[in-house]
Image 1 (tube, helix red, strand yellow):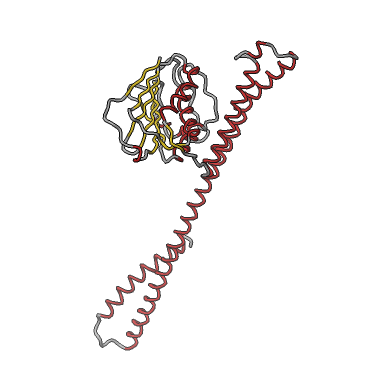
Image 2: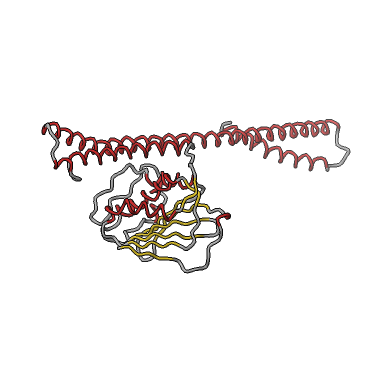
Length: 332
C-alpha cells in the first residue's frame, strides 16, 4: 500500500465522520420535509456508510502491509548483520591463520634446512635450545592452533560433550602449576583453598585446558615478577575458581569483547611482546565452562589488576564444609 493510498483512506474516513455528523443534524429537522429531500438524505446515509466501511478496510489493509514491511525490513537487517559478521570472522580467520601458521612453519623450515646442511646431528642440536627442540616446540604450537580450531567448531556446533568424572580441583590446579613453573619464574604465588573441599564432576582434560589458558594469559599480559593469586571459594551450590593478577587490568569496554572469536587485546604496556595465538582461547574457555553448566567472567581487581573467575556446580551429596579457617599457601 502506497503513501497515496493511506492519504486517500484517511480523507475518506474523515469525510465519513463529517457526513455522519451532517446526517444526524439533518434527521433532526422537522418531519414534514418533502419526500424528495428524505430520499436524498437516505442516499447520503448509504454513501456515508459505504465510505466508512471502505475506509476501515483500507486502514486494516494498510496496517497489515506496514507490519509485513517492518517484519521484512527486520529480516533483511538481520541477514545483513549475519553476513557482515560472517565476513568479519572469515577475514579474521584468514588473517590470524596466515600470520600464526607462517611463523612456526618458517621456523621449522629454517631449522630443518640447517640440519640438512649439517648432514649430521650434533650435541648442540639435542640441547633444550637446539634445532630439534625448536622443531618440536613449533610443531606443538601448530598442533595447539589446530586443536583450538577443532574445539571452536565443536562448541559452535553444540557437540562438545564433557566426559565427566569426580576429581579434586585443587589437585588439578597443582598439576597445572607444576607444568607452568618454568614460565612463572620467580613470580610470587598465593594459593588459597578452603578445607574439606569436595571433588567436582568435570571433564578433567577440558577444565585443565581452561586453567592452563587462564594462567597463561595472566603470565602473558602482566609484568614479569608481578604476583599471582589463585582462590577456590565454595558457595552454596557452586565452586568458584578465581585467578587474580596485578597487571594493567581489563578496560570495562573490553570485558565482553575479549570472549569474542579472534579478538585480541592490544599489546600490554609492560614492554612485553604481543602474545601469540588466534584470539580463540577465552572463547573456548567460556564454551567449556558453559558446557559444565558454569559461567566464566572477568572483573576488575581492587588495587589494580584483573580477576578471571569461573564457576562449577557442586553436588549436595558431597557433604557440607566445616567452619574451619581457610588454608592459605604461599609459594615463592
